[in-house]
Length: 467
Image (tube, rainbow, N blue to C red):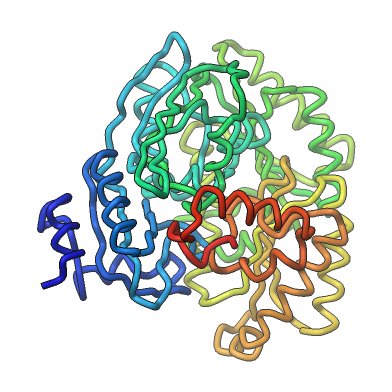
């Protein structure tokens, strides 16, 4: 008999504790890059059961790996392969606890999908603006633990800016109830920020109080062709000056990225009649239903076409057309996945440095790996790019993949040189843990280690991730 597993089953019930082959679907990350092993996968039903599981792990000296929708891209929710950990799968914590339209706040448990949060907000005539391609499967706990970004960071900020309060099970099994729905609270350290972006290494987020906003009633989506990212930076400045906060999204898409989607997404069509090297997908929204947003979108498009920044463009004339334009952007990762393995980079840079960075790093890569395919796209409005590399013929990729560390080292060194970050919205997980000493100062790393040691002295929470 295994006393530890008996204790786990006593907490969650026998049907909610999986071992062996039954646990396998939860032990590999979404990209298929990492596969670990675990003593069991437990599915608690509420915060009290999460806390009870943590206390059992403390008593048995068992590591803990929290997991939500398992849509992460850096292996942060996958256990190590030593088979020691209990994986706590949080998808059963799936209740919307409270919606307060008057205070523009919503409290959701960690296992609620982002799409369900959107639906609950809309039912209250509000919006939760965080938008990700994986919103149908990613969950609140994971979104918070990775400080996810998405396409509307330009207007509303990262997850960190959208969280009012948290409920967290701490490494000793205590429950911290910080579910405050306050915009102002200067009563000491703002503890919630320790857990946002910590990837489950300091505690397990079990619920969150999130900010809501007035629901836009008017939206205009614009697809613009540009000759070079330099034009995109200038265009961003011009559109922000004219539209202000009505400009909620500003995405950069390379032609290489678009071609992959056109090849792999059934029914996808090129929005413009001729081929261009780069594109911008921009969205304007307003909470007032009148003709001003239509006029602004048309006027802005005409102005940028006349200015020479834009070579061609189109304004979506219906919701269906807008969805089709967004599908071209949102399916890039899936289209690239169908092409086979690639070397992915989730980077951020000062917006003004992006054109020079792209020219610089592309030239350096071409010298070392001629013919390299660069799939570049992302949230130019907030400086976040997805910079993915492979060879056009997947069968030729083996040599490149074997030198992944060299390839990524070149890219990351140039990111650092241009004042950027090697992780913008995907986190560190297992993938980038070894890179932090190269790109973070020893002072920063020492502070992180001291926080970790103070809160989790046994190193039990999500071992092998971040630090």
